[in-house]
Image (cartoon, rainbow, N blue to C red; front, side, top):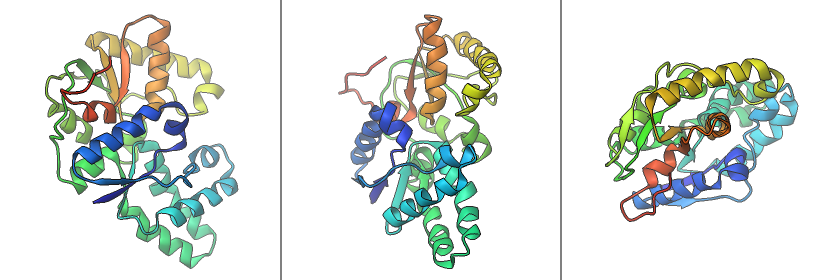
Length: 248
């Protein structure tokens, strides 16, 4: 299958290793990965902070770039949630039947990474090897918008060498929430403190998630406390094999 990678602006700017891991993983599984350099942002940052008209050109760009894609892989549940929850509404508000139809036709081919692997490819064991003690943080968008359920955990349980430990209070937010962490800094810090206690209680070496935004927030707190716990996007774990020099 030809898979179009929408890396997201957050990953492209701050976590390029995630995109590289997605490419290694999908190519190892026998798929061809296409990367369109015209891609930018899904518009979530604009839309969620009240700049909804400014998000519209980004929707139109996304549809134009990917309208003919066989499948679009997005290693971020928050970006996929933006597309599924808001793109149809945004298109309908423009009274543009062509745009609304294009959005409706494209969205069923847009997948968060773990959805693509399990639901589209029918895989759980992707041949990964990651010999570390790992705990999984379920981000809010992955739980409440995409309803991924145990898809990420099903993939992680099949990784050879991994010691996967349950994270207490897995349904609790880490406190990031984009600009929430800036505008409501005290509340965000309190939520993060609870999440860090739960992480440290697992004695995990690595925290993973499907969203680097959460992982950045969690890592920042753990690093300041010198907790010695690393973070890794789930793509980095699933892409690792015995022949790799495994970080962490």
